[in-house]
Amino acid sequence: MSMKDRLLVEVQGQNGAYYKAYVTDVFDEDIQLRFDQDWQPESKFQFNRVRLPPPTPTAPTEYACGQEIEVFSRASDQESCGWWRAVVKMIKGDFHVVEYLGWETKYTEIVPSERLRPKSSEPFITKRTFLTFPLEVPDELQEFCKDEKAEDIHLEFRTAIDACSVKYIPEKGILFVITRNEGSQKRAEILQDMHYRNISQRLILLKKTEEAAKCLEATKLQSSNQFTEEFTVMSDLMGLAIGAHGQNIQQARKVEGVINVEIIEDSCTFKVVGETKESVEKARLMLEYSEAAHQVPRNLVGKVIGKNGRFIQEIVDKSGVVRVKIEGDNEPEPSVPRLEGNVPFIFVGTKDAIDNANLLLEYHISHLKRVEQLRQEKLEIDQQLRSVVRTQWQHSSLQSYEAESSSRGYRGDRSRGRGRGRGRGGYDRGDREHSEMSDRGSGRGGYRGRYYRGGGGGGGGYRGNHRGRGDFNRDDHRGGGRGRGGGGGAPPMDKKDDKDRRVDDRRGGGGDDRPPREERRGGGAGGSNINNSNSGGGGGGGGGSGGGGGGSGGSIDDRREDDNRPAAA
Image (cartoon, rainbow, N blue to C red; front, side, top):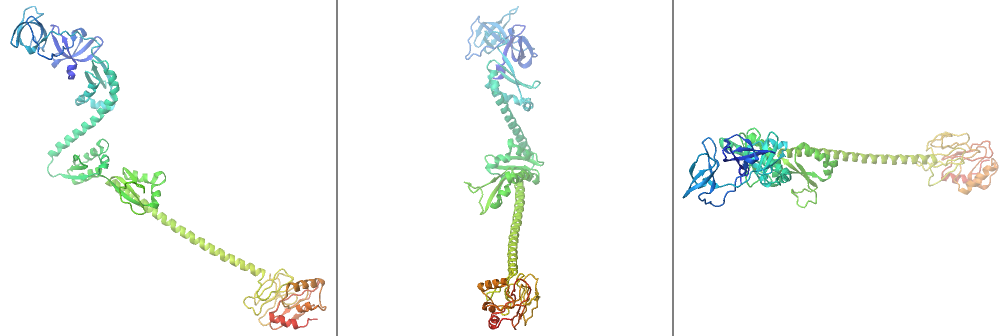
Protein backbone atom coordinates (compact mmCIF):
# COMPACT_ATOMS: atom_id res chain seq x y z
CA MET A 1 0.00 0.00 0.00
CA SER A 2 1.37 3.39 -1.00
CA MET A 3 1.72 6.32 1.33
CA LYS A 4 -1.29 8.01 -0.20
CA ASP A 5 -3.44 4.97 0.31
CA ARG A 6 -2.44 4.77 3.96
CA LEU A 7 -3.52 8.37 4.46
CA LEU A 8 -6.64 8.05 2.38
CA VAL A 9 -9.95 8.96 4.02
CA GLU A 10 -13.41 9.95 2.88
CA VAL A 11 -14.88 13.24 3.96
CA GLN A 12 -18.59 13.99 3.74
CA GLY A 13 -19.58 17.03 1.73
CA GLN A 14 -22.50 19.33 2.22
CA ASN A 15 -24.47 17.34 -0.39
CA GLY A 16 -24.03 14.09 1.56
CA ALA A 17 -21.52 12.52 -0.82
CA TYR A 18 -18.15 11.24 0.43
CA TYR A 19 -15.04 12.54 -1.37
CA LYS A 20 -11.49 11.23 -1.38
CA ALA A 21 -9.00 13.16 0.74
CA TYR A 22 -5.62 12.67 2.41
CA VAL A 23 -4.62 13.38 5.99
CA THR A 24 -1.93 16.04 6.36
CA ASP A 25 -2.18 16.82 10.08
CA VAL A 26 -4.14 15.85 13.13
CA PHE A 27 -5.29 18.14 15.92
CA ASP A 28 -7.24 17.64 19.12
CA GLU A 29 -10.64 18.58 17.72
CA ASP A 30 -10.33 18.19 13.96
CA ILE A 31 -8.19 16.87 11.16
CA GLN A 32 -6.56 18.59 8.22
CA LEU A 33 -7.19 17.10 4.79
CA ARG A 34 -6.00 17.67 1.26
CA PHE A 35 -8.43 16.72 -1.52
CA ASP A 36 -7.63 14.44 -4.37
CA GLN A 37 -6.38 16.42 -7.37
CA ASP A 38 -6.67 19.54 -5.18
CA TRP A 39 -10.11 20.40 -6.54
CA GLN A 40 -10.69 22.18 -3.24
CA PRO A 41 -8.17 23.87 -0.96
CA GLU A 42 -6.68 22.01 1.99
CA SER A 43 -9.03 22.37 4.96
CA LYS A 44 -9.86 21.20 8.46
CA PHE A 45 -12.84 18.99 9.18
CA GLN A 46 -14.55 17.62 12.23
CA PHE A 47 -13.89 14.00 13.07
CA ASN A 48 -17.60 13.13 12.67
CA ARG A 49 -17.44 14.01 8.96
CA VAL A 50 -14.48 11.78 8.14
CA ARG A 51 -14.31 8.02 7.81
CA LEU A 52 -11.88 5.45 6.49
CA PRO A 53 -12.53 3.92 3.06
CA PRO A 54 -14.07 0.42 3.12
CA PRO A 55 -11.77 -2.48 2.36
CA THR A 56 -11.37 -3.42 -1.28
CA PRO A 57 -13.32 -6.63 -2.08
CA THR A 58 -11.23 -9.57 -3.21
CA ALA A 59 -13.88 -10.91 -5.59
CA PRO A 60 -16.45 -9.26 -7.88
CA THR A 61 -19.57 -8.26 -6.02
CA GLU A 62 -22.99 -9.29 -7.20
CA TYR A 63 -25.76 -6.84 -6.63
CA ALA A 64 -29.51 -7.38 -6.32
CA CYS A 65 -32.44 -5.19 -7.06
CA GLY A 66 -33.44 -3.00 -4.15
CA GLN A 67 -29.96 -3.26 -2.59
CA GLU A 68 -28.61 -0.02 -1.16
CA ILE A 69 -25.25 0.77 -2.67
CA GLU A 70 -22.87 3.63 -3.25
CA VAL A 71 -22.19 5.07 -6.69
CA PHE A 72 -18.99 6.82 -7.67
CA SER A 73 -20.28 9.87 -9.51
CA ARG A 74 -20.42 13.67 -9.44
CA ALA A 75 -23.15 16.25 -9.63
CA SER A 76 -21.38 18.63 -12.02
CA ASP A 77 -18.24 18.95 -14.08
CA GLN A 78 -16.78 21.54 -11.67
CA GLU A 79 -16.44 19.10 -8.81
CA SER A 80 -14.67 15.82 -8.25
CA CYS A 81 -16.34 12.47 -8.10
CA GLY A 82 -17.63 11.14 -4.77
CA TRP A 83 -19.57 8.28 -3.36
CA TRP A 84 -23.29 8.89 -3.47
CA ARG A 85 -25.99 6.84 -1.82
CA ALA A 86 -28.34 4.97 -4.24
CA VAL A 87 -30.58 1.92 -4.68
CA VAL A 88 -30.37 -0.67 -7.48
CA LYS A 89 -33.58 -0.62 -9.55
CA MET A 90 -32.67 -2.89 -12.43
CA ILE A 91 -29.80 -5.07 -13.51
CA LYS A 92 -29.11 -5.90 -17.10
CA GLY A 93 -25.81 -7.63 -17.76
CA ASP A 94 -22.99 -5.52 -16.41
CA PHE A 95 -25.10 -2.37 -16.21
CA HIS A 96 -27.24 -1.28 -13.33
CA VAL A 97 -30.10 1.20 -13.14
CA VAL A 98 -29.72 3.09 -9.88
CA GLU A 99 -31.81 5.74 -8.15
CA TYR A 100 -30.01 8.32 -5.96
CA LEU A 101 -31.18 8.86 -2.43
CA GLY A 102 -31.44 12.11 -0.51
CA TRP A 103 -32.68 14.19 -3.36
CA GLU A 104 -36.00 15.95 -3.37
CA THR A 105 -36.58 14.88 -6.94
CA LYS A 106 -36.17 11.40 -8.26
CA TYR A 107 -33.00 10.93 -10.25
CA THR A 108 -31.91 7.69 -11.95
CA GLU A 109 -28.80 6.74 -13.92
CA ILE A 110 -27.40 3.71 -15.71
CA VAL A 111 -23.90 2.91 -14.49
CA PRO A 112 -21.45 0.03 -15.02
CA SER A 113 -20.62 -2.31 -12.13
CA GLU A 114 -17.05 -0.92 -11.61
CA ARG A 115 -18.58 2.33 -10.37
CA LEU A 116 -20.59 0.54 -7.72
CA ARG A 117 -19.70 -0.75 -4.29
CA PRO A 118 -21.69 -1.99 -1.33
CA LYS A 119 -22.80 0.55 1.23
CA SER A 120 -19.87 1.42 3.55
CA SER A 121 -20.21 0.51 7.19
CA GLU A 122 -17.01 2.28 8.34
CA PRO A 123 -17.49 4.48 11.45
CA PHE A 124 -16.25 8.04 11.74
CA ILE A 125 -12.66 8.50 12.86
CA THR A 126 -11.52 9.82 16.25
CA LYS A 127 -8.44 11.74 17.40
CA ARG A 128 -6.78 8.39 18.17
CA THR A 129 -7.27 7.02 14.67
CA PHE A 130 -4.28 8.96 13.32
CA LEU A 131 -1.28 9.77 15.57
CA THR A 132 1.52 12.23 14.87
CA PHE A 133 4.96 12.95 16.39
CA PRO A 134 8.09 14.88 15.29
CA LEU A 135 11.73 13.74 14.94
CA GLU A 136 14.60 16.25 15.11
CA VAL A 137 16.90 16.24 12.07
CA PRO A 138 20.66 16.97 12.42
CA ASP A 139 21.81 20.26 10.95
CA GLU A 140 24.14 18.65 8.40
CA LEU A 141 21.24 16.66 6.93
CA GLN A 142 18.59 19.35 6.80
CA GLU A 143 19.79 20.77 3.50
CA PHE A 144 19.70 17.36 1.89
CA CYS A 145 16.24 16.57 3.28
CA LYS A 146 14.83 19.59 1.48
CA ASP A 147 15.47 17.86 -1.82
CA GLU A 148 12.43 16.20 -3.30
CA LYS A 149 14.51 13.11 -4.02
CA ALA A 150 15.12 12.70 -0.32
CA GLU A 151 11.53 11.61 0.22
CA ASP A 152 12.36 8.20 -1.14
CA ILE A 153 15.06 7.79 1.52
CA HIS A 154 12.42 7.71 4.25
CA LEU A 155 10.45 4.86 2.70
CA GLU A 156 12.32 2.09 4.47
CA PHE A 157 12.21 4.00 7.74
CA ARG A 158 8.46 4.54 7.34
CA THR A 159 7.95 0.84 6.66
CA ALA A 160 10.15 -0.17 9.61
CA ILE A 161 8.16 1.91 12.09
CA ASP A 162 4.81 1.05 10.42
CA ALA A 163 3.88 4.66 9.78
CA CYS A 164 1.51 6.15 7.23
CA SER A 165 3.70 9.11 6.38
CA VAL A 166 7.22 10.45 7.16
CA LYS A 167 7.67 13.92 5.78
CA TYR A 168 10.33 16.60 6.31
CA ILE A 169 9.11 20.03 7.43
CA PRO A 170 11.77 22.60 6.36
CA GLU A 171 10.36 25.41 8.48
CA LYS A 172 10.73 23.38 11.65
CA GLY A 173 13.67 21.17 10.66
CA ILE A 174 11.88 17.98 11.71
CA LEU A 175 10.53 14.76 10.31
CA PHE A 176 6.75 14.74 10.77
CA VAL A 177 5.37 11.24 11.21
CA ILE A 178 1.71 10.26 10.80
CA THR A 179 0.77 6.76 11.82
CA ARG A 180 -2.17 4.61 12.82
CA ASN A 181 0.03 2.36 15.01
CA GLU A 182 0.63 3.44 18.58
CA GLY A 183 3.98 1.59 18.68
CA SER A 184 5.44 3.58 15.79
CA GLN A 185 6.87 6.32 17.97
CA LYS A 186 8.85 3.90 20.12
CA ARG A 187 10.22 2.20 17.04
CA ALA A 188 11.19 5.53 15.56
CA GLU A 189 13.16 6.52 18.64
CA ILE A 190 15.10 3.25 18.45
CA LEU A 191 15.88 3.53 14.74
CA GLN A 192 16.37 7.29 14.59
CA ASP A 193 20.20 7.44 14.80
CA MET A 194 20.67 4.57 12.40
CA HIS A 195 18.28 6.17 9.95
CA TYR A 196 20.19 9.45 9.97
CA ARG A 197 23.47 7.62 9.40
CA ASN A 198 21.95 5.82 6.44
CA ILE A 199 20.76 9.14 5.07
CA SER A 200 24.34 10.48 5.22
CA GLN A 201 25.73 7.50 3.34
CA ARG A 202 23.05 7.65 0.71
CA LEU A 203 23.64 11.36 0.31
CA ILE A 204 27.28 10.72 -0.52
CA LEU A 205 26.38 7.97 -2.97
CA LEU A 206 23.81 10.15 -4.68
CA LYS A 207 26.34 12.92 -5.13
CA LYS A 208 28.84 10.49 -6.57
CA THR A 209 26.21 9.16 -8.93
CA GLU A 210 25.39 12.64 -10.10
CA GLU A 211 29.05 13.48 -10.63
CA ALA A 212 29.57 10.26 -12.54
CA ALA A 213 26.57 11.01 -14.71
CA LYS A 214 27.89 14.48 -15.43
CA CYS A 215 31.32 13.13 -16.27
CA LEU A 216 29.81 10.52 -18.53
CA GLU A 217 27.82 13.12 -20.34
CA ALA A 218 30.84 15.40 -20.63
CA THR A 219 32.95 12.55 -21.95
CA LYS A 220 30.47 11.84 -24.71
CA LEU A 221 30.48 15.47 -25.76
CA GLN A 222 34.27 15.82 -25.84
CA SER A 223 36.16 15.63 -29.07
CA SER A 224 38.75 13.01 -29.88
CA ASN A 225 41.76 15.21 -28.95
CA GLN A 226 41.77 14.06 -25.35
CA PHE A 227 44.62 12.73 -23.25
CA THR A 228 44.06 9.48 -21.43
CA GLU A 229 46.26 7.63 -18.99
CA GLU A 230 45.69 4.35 -17.23
CA PHE A 231 47.73 3.17 -14.26
CA THR A 232 47.40 0.34 -11.77
CA VAL A 233 47.62 0.57 -8.01
CA MET A 234 48.35 -2.32 -5.63
CA SER A 235 45.16 -3.83 -4.29
CA ASP A 236 46.33 -3.22 -0.70
CA LEU A 237 46.64 0.50 -1.46
CA MET A 238 43.36 1.04 -3.31
CA GLY A 239 41.70 2.37 -0.17
CA LEU A 240 44.41 5.00 0.20
CA ALA A 241 44.24 5.92 -3.47
CA ILE A 242 40.46 6.39 -3.42
CA GLY A 243 40.51 8.21 -0.09
CA ALA A 244 37.86 8.54 2.58
CA HIS A 245 34.47 8.73 0.85
CA GLY A 246 36.26 9.04 -2.49
CA GLN A 247 37.94 12.28 -1.48
CA ASN A 248 41.08 11.76 -3.58
CA ILE A 249 39.07 11.01 -6.71
CA GLN A 250 36.97 14.10 -6.15
CA GLN A 251 40.06 16.25 -5.73
CA ALA A 252 41.57 14.79 -8.89
CA ARG A 253 38.40 15.59 -10.84
CA LYS A 254 38.62 19.19 -9.69
CA VAL A 255 42.01 19.62 -11.33
CA GLU A 256 41.71 22.14 -14.11
CA GLY A 257 41.61 20.38 -17.45
CA VAL A 258 40.61 16.97 -16.09
CA ILE A 259 37.48 15.64 -17.74
CA ASN A 260 36.97 12.38 -15.93
CA VAL A 261 38.58 10.08 -13.38
CA GLU A 262 37.23 6.56 -13.04
CA ILE A 263 38.19 3.10 -11.87
CA ILE A 264 37.91 0.34 -14.42
CA GLU A 265 35.43 -2.21 -13.17
CA ASP A 266 36.75 -5.31 -11.38
CA SER A 267 40.32 -4.03 -11.41
CA CYS A 268 42.72 -1.75 -9.58
CA THR A 269 43.29 0.44 -12.63
CA PHE A 270 42.56 4.15 -12.74
CA LYS A 271 41.66 5.89 -15.96
CA VAL A 272 42.21 9.63 -16.16
CA VAL A 273 40.94 11.68 -19.10
CA GLY A 274 41.88 15.32 -19.53
CA GLU A 275 42.17 18.15 -21.99
CA THR A 276 45.93 18.46 -21.57
CA LYS A 277 48.74 16.10 -20.77
CA GLU A 278 49.81 18.23 -17.80
CA SER A 279 46.40 18.05 -16.16
CA VAL A 280 46.30 14.27 -16.57
CA GLU A 281 49.76 13.86 -15.03
CA LYS A 282 48.82 16.11 -12.13
CA ALA A 283 45.73 14.04 -11.41
CA ARG A 284 47.78 10.87 -11.66
CA LEU A 285 50.25 12.11 -9.04
CA MET A 286 47.32 12.55 -6.65
CA LEU A 287 46.04 9.00 -7.12
CA GLU A 288 49.05 6.79 -7.83
CA TYR A 289 49.93 5.32 -4.45
CA SER A 290 52.80 2.87 -4.14
CA GLU A 291 55.46 1.43 -1.83
CA ALA A 292 59.19 2.05 -1.99
CA ALA A 293 61.94 0.63 0.21
CA HIS A 294 65.04 2.46 1.37
CA GLN A 295 67.90 0.40 2.81
CA VAL A 296 69.30 1.87 6.04
CA PRO A 297 72.58 0.62 7.57
CA ARG A 298 71.85 -1.47 10.63
CA ASN A 299 74.12 0.55 12.91
CA LEU A 300 72.21 3.74 12.05
CA VAL A 301 68.65 2.43 12.47
CA GLY A 302 68.26 3.69 16.02
CA LYS A 303 69.62 7.12 15.16
CA VAL A 304 67.41 7.39 12.07
CA ILE A 305 64.33 6.59 14.13
CA GLY A 306 65.36 8.91 16.95
CA LYS A 307 64.23 9.06 20.53
CA ASN A 308 60.52 8.15 20.71
CA GLY A 309 60.50 8.09 16.88
CA ARG A 310 61.13 11.83 16.64
CA PHE A 311 63.29 11.85 13.50
CA ILE A 312 61.29 9.30 11.50
CA GLN A 313 58.03 11.06 12.42
CA GLU A 314 59.48 14.33 11.17
CA ILE A 315 60.33 12.67 7.85
CA VAL A 316 56.77 11.30 7.55
CA ASP A 317 55.21 14.67 8.36
CA LYS A 318 57.38 16.74 6.03
CA SER A 319 57.32 14.33 3.09
CA GLY A 320 53.58 13.67 3.09
CA VAL A 321 53.81 9.88 3.00
CA VAL A 322 50.98 7.97 4.60
CA ARG A 323 53.13 5.70 6.73
CA VAL A 324 56.51 4.02 7.01
CA LYS A 325 57.06 0.37 7.82
CA ILE A 326 60.33 -0.96 9.26
CA GLU A 327 60.80 -4.66 8.61
CA GLY A 328 62.80 -6.41 11.30
CA ASP A 329 64.84 -9.59 11.06
CA ASN A 330 61.95 -11.70 12.34
CA GLU A 331 59.52 -10.62 9.61
CA PRO A 332 57.80 -13.86 8.52
CA GLU A 333 57.01 -12.62 5.01
CA PRO A 334 59.33 -9.75 4.02
CA SER A 335 57.88 -7.61 1.27
CA VAL A 336 61.23 -6.48 -0.14
CA PRO A 337 64.61 -8.21 -0.51
CA ARG A 338 66.92 -7.66 2.44
CA LEU A 339 70.51 -6.54 1.86
CA GLU A 340 73.27 -7.73 4.18
CA GLY A 341 73.89 -5.27 7.00
CA ASN A 342 70.82 -3.15 6.16
CA VAL A 343 67.26 -2.76 7.39
CA PRO A 344 64.55 -1.76 4.87
CA PHE A 345 62.39 1.29 5.56
CA ILE A 346 59.24 0.98 3.41
CA PHE A 347 57.42 4.23 2.63
CA VAL A 348 53.79 4.22 1.49
CA GLY A 349 52.31 7.19 -0.33
CA THR A 350 52.16 9.01 -3.63
CA LYS A 351 55.19 9.03 -5.89
CA ASP A 352 55.92 12.64 -5.06
CA ALA A 353 55.65 12.02 -1.31
CA ILE A 354 57.95 8.96 -1.50
CA ASP A 355 60.56 11.00 -3.39
CA ASN A 356 60.43 13.62 -0.66
CA ALA A 357 60.80 10.97 2.05
CA ASN A 358 63.82 9.40 0.31
CA LEU A 359 65.41 12.83 0.00
CA LEU A 360 64.98 13.56 3.71
CA LEU A 361 66.12 10.09 4.77
CA GLU A 362 69.18 10.12 2.51
CA TYR A 363 70.21 13.52 3.80
CA HIS A 364 69.79 12.40 7.41
CA ILE A 365 71.79 9.19 6.84
CA SER A 366 74.56 11.19 5.15
CA HIS A 367 74.71 13.47 8.16
CA LEU A 368 74.86 10.50 10.56
CA LYS A 369 77.66 8.87 8.55
CA ARG A 370 79.67 12.09 8.59
CA VAL A 371 79.16 12.45 12.32
CA GLU A 372 80.26 8.85 12.84
CA GLN A 373 83.35 9.45 10.71
CA LEU A 374 84.27 12.52 12.75
CA ARG A 375 83.73 10.55 15.94
CA GLN A 376 86.06 7.80 14.75
CA GLU A 377 88.69 10.37 13.81
CA LYS A 378 88.44 11.90 17.25
CA LEU A 379 88.80 8.49 18.87
CA GLU A 380 91.93 7.79 16.83
CA ILE A 381 93.41 11.15 17.81
CA ASP A 382 92.56 10.50 21.44
CA GLN A 383 94.28 7.10 21.22
CA GLN A 384 97.39 8.65 19.69
CA LEU A 385 97.37 11.37 22.32
CA ARG A 386 97.21 8.81 25.11
CA SER A 387 100.11 6.90 23.54
CA VAL A 388 102.25 10.05 23.28
CA VAL A 389 101.45 11.08 26.84
CA ARG A 390 102.30 7.59 28.10
CA THR A 391 105.63 7.62 26.23
CA GLN A 392 106.52 11.06 27.56
CA TRP A 393 105.62 9.97 31.07
CA GLN A 394 107.80 6.90 30.83
CA HIS A 395 110.70 8.96 29.45
CA SER A 396 110.25 11.57 32.17
CA SER A 397 110.13 8.87 34.81
CA LEU A 398 113.34 7.35 33.46
CA GLN A 399 115.08 10.73 33.52
CA SER A 400 113.87 11.35 37.05
CA TYR A 401 115.13 7.95 38.08
CA GLU A 402 118.54 8.56 36.48
CA ALA A 403 118.79 11.99 38.08
CA GLU A 404 117.87 10.54 41.45
CA SER A 405 120.41 7.75 40.98
CA SER A 406 123.11 10.29 40.08
CA SER A 407 122.31 12.39 43.14
CA ARG A 408 122.59 9.33 45.38
CA GLY A 409 125.77 8.07 43.77
CA TYR A 410 126.53 5.24 41.37
CA ARG A 411 128.28 2.14 42.55
CA GLY A 412 130.43 0.45 39.98
CA ASP A 413 130.82 -3.21 39.53
CA ARG A 414 134.56 -3.26 40.13
CA SER A 415 135.22 -1.11 43.20
CA ARG A 416 133.32 0.75 45.81
CA GLY A 417 134.48 3.76 47.77
CA ARG A 418 132.92 5.03 50.94
CA GLY A 419 133.17 8.32 52.70
CA ARG A 420 132.29 9.53 56.10
CA GLY A 421 129.56 11.72 54.70
CA ARG A 422 126.03 10.78 53.82
CA GLY A 423 126.74 10.34 50.11
CA ARG A 424 128.47 7.54 48.29
CA GLY A 425 131.14 7.73 45.69
CA GLY A 426 131.26 5.87 42.45
CA TYR A 427 133.13 5.75 39.23
CA ASP A 428 132.73 7.35 35.91
CA ARG A 429 131.09 5.03 33.47
CA GLY A 430 132.87 6.85 30.70
CA ASP A 431 136.38 6.02 31.90
CA ARG A 432 136.60 2.95 34.05
CA GLU A 433 140.39 2.93 34.08
CA HIS A 434 140.51 6.32 35.81
CA SER A 435 137.64 5.78 38.22
CA GLU A 436 137.31 8.03 41.18
CA MET A 437 137.00 6.42 44.57
CA SER A 438 135.19 8.26 47.25
CA ASP A 439 136.08 8.10 50.85
CA ARG A 440 134.20 9.26 53.84
CA GLY A 441 134.03 12.98 54.14
CA SER A 442 132.14 15.47 56.14
CA GLY A 443 129.98 16.50 53.20
CA ARG A 444 127.59 14.62 50.96
CA GLY A 445 129.25 12.44 48.43
CA GLY A 446 128.20 12.49 44.79
CA TYR A 447 129.25 11.85 41.25
CA ARG A 448 130.45 14.67 39.04
CA GLY A 449 132.13 13.06 36.10
CA ARG A 450 135.61 12.69 34.79
CA TYR A 451 136.89 16.22 34.43
CA TYR A 452 135.32 17.77 37.46
CA ARG A 453 137.43 20.45 39.08
CA GLY A 454 136.92 21.01 42.72
CA GLY A 455 138.83 22.04 45.76
CA GLY A 456 138.46 21.45 49.41
CA GLY A 457 139.81 22.82 52.59
CA GLY A 458 142.39 20.07 52.97
CA GLY A 459 143.60 17.44 50.57
CA GLY A 460 142.09 16.17 47.30
CA GLY A 461 138.47 15.04 47.22
CA TYR A 462 135.00 16.03 45.94
CA ARG A 463 131.56 16.77 47.24
CA GLY A 464 128.37 15.70 45.56
CA ASN A 465 126.42 18.86 46.31
CA HIS A 466 128.90 21.37 44.92
CA ARG A 467 130.05 22.43 48.36
CA GLY A 468 133.59 21.22 47.82
CA ARG A 469 135.90 22.17 45.01
CA GLY A 470 138.99 20.35 43.86
CA ASP A 471 141.49 20.49 41.12
CA PHE A 472 141.37 17.83 38.53
CA ASN A 473 143.31 17.31 35.38
CA ARG A 474 143.65 14.57 32.90
CA ASP A 475 147.20 13.48 33.93
CA ASP A 476 147.05 14.06 37.58
CA HIS A 477 143.69 13.42 39.17
CA ARG A 478 143.38 15.27 42.35
CA GLY A 479 140.45 15.51 44.65
CA GLY A 480 139.84 17.65 47.61
CA GLY A 481 137.41 17.23 50.38
CA ARG A 482 136.81 18.52 53.79
CA GLY A 483 136.96 16.04 56.64
CA ARG A 484 137.61 15.85 60.27
CA GLY A 485 141.16 14.63 59.84
CA GLY A 486 143.81 14.21 57.27
CA GLY A 487 143.52 11.56 54.73
CA GLY A 488 144.75 10.48 51.43
CA GLY A 489 144.13 7.94 48.84
CA ALA A 490 142.90 4.69 50.17
CA PRO A 491 142.33 1.36 48.62
CA PRO A 492 138.94 -0.21 48.83
CA MET A 493 138.05 -1.81 52.09
CA ASP A 494 135.45 -4.18 53.27
CA LYS A 495 132.81 -3.50 55.87
CA LYS A 496 134.91 -4.76 58.74
CA ASP A 497 137.81 -2.46 57.87
CA ASP A 498 135.42 0.43 57.54
CA LYS A 499 134.00 -0.26 60.96
CA ASP A 500 137.45 -0.42 62.53
CA ARG A 501 138.38 2.81 60.89
CA ARG A 502 135.39 4.59 62.28
CA VAL A 503 136.30 3.35 65.73
CA ASP A 504 139.83 4.62 65.29
CA ASP A 505 138.59 7.93 64.06
CA ARG A 506 136.53 8.36 67.14
CA ARG A 507 139.57 7.61 69.26
CA GLY A 508 141.28 10.59 67.66
CA GLY A 509 143.86 8.92 65.50
CA GLY A 510 146.35 11.43 64.02
CA GLY A 511 150.03 11.31 63.20
CA ASP A 512 150.79 8.40 65.50
CA ASP A 513 151.67 5.00 64.27
CA ARG A 514 148.75 3.00 63.17
CA PRO A 515 148.12 -0.72 63.43
CA PRO A 516 148.69 -2.71 60.31
CA ARG A 517 145.05 -2.24 59.33
CA GLU A 518 145.48 1.49 59.34
CA GLU A 519 148.62 1.15 57.34
CA ARG A 520 146.70 -0.77 54.68
CA ARG A 521 144.33 2.10 54.40
CA GLY A 522 147.12 4.54 53.98
CA GLY A 523 145.56 7.07 56.33
CA GLY A 524 147.87 9.84 57.53
CA ALA A 525 147.80 12.67 59.93
CA GLY A 526 148.52 16.26 59.32
CA GLY A 527 147.07 16.35 55.82
CA SER A 528 149.72 14.49 53.89
CA ASN A 529 149.22 14.08 50.13
CA ILE A 530 149.92 10.98 48.15
CA ASN A 531 150.22 11.41 44.43
CA ASN A 532 150.81 9.04 41.65
CA SER A 533 150.57 9.21 37.99
CA ASN A 534 147.17 7.66 37.88
CA SER A 535 145.39 8.94 40.91
CA GLY A 536 146.14 10.87 44.00
CA GLY A 537 144.45 11.37 47.27
CA GLY A 538 145.12 14.13 49.70
CA GLY A 539 143.93 14.34 53.22
CA GLY A 540 143.32 17.67 54.73
CA GLY A 541 144.45 17.91 58.29
CA GLY A 542 142.13 19.70 60.51
CA GLY A 543 141.60 20.20 64.12
CA GLY A 544 138.85 18.14 65.47
CA SER A 545 138.01 15.51 67.86
CA GLY A 546 139.87 13.00 65.81
CA GLY A 547 141.80 12.57 62.66
CA GLY A 548 139.89 11.69 59.63
CA GLY A 549 140.94 10.16 56.45
CA GLY A 550 139.20 11.08 53.32
CA GLY A 551 140.11 11.36 49.76
CA SER A 552 139.57 9.89 46.46
CA GLY A 553 140.33 6.28 46.07
CA GLY A 554 142.65 5.01 43.43
CA SER A 555 142.32 2.27 40.94
CA ILE A 556 142.99 -1.37 41.66
CA ASP A 557 146.62 -1.05 40.56
CA ASP A 558 147.07 2.00 42.72
CA ARG A 559 145.79 0.18 45.72
CA ARG A 560 148.32 -2.57 45.21
CA GLU A 561 150.99 0.07 45.15
CA ASP A 562 149.69 1.65 48.26
CA ASP A 563 149.71 -1.62 50.06
CA ASN A 564 153.51 -1.74 49.76
CA ARG A 565 153.96 1.95 50.47
CA PRO A 566 154.87 2.93 54.08
CA ALA A 567 152.46 5.15 55.88
CA ALA A 568 153.26 8.82 56.01
CA ALA A 569 154.67 10.05 59.25
